[in-house]
Amino acid sequence: MSSPKDFLLSALSGAEDAIERSLGALSPFTILPYRGFGNHETVKVTGRLLKDERIEQPHEDDPVWKNVWTMVKHYESD
Image (cartoon, one colour):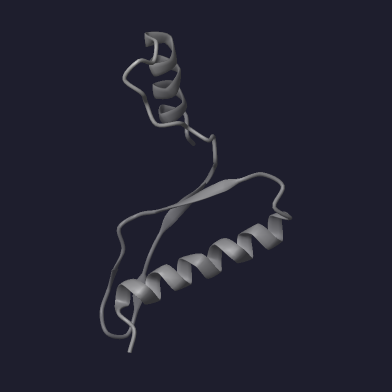
């Protein structure tokens, strides 16, 4: 028997595949799930679909302007 976490990850993967097929994979995207809830019979998970901006991880030697630009990209992720 699989765990609830495994079931949820499988369901999200299936949803991601369905969205990708319906969009024709025109642009990369990220599914950002919100915290859900459930019991033994029902699970409710919500989230949002974001265009993947390919935001890089910061590096110690990055200039200030690059860090500010990355911060703006995070805030305008809607």
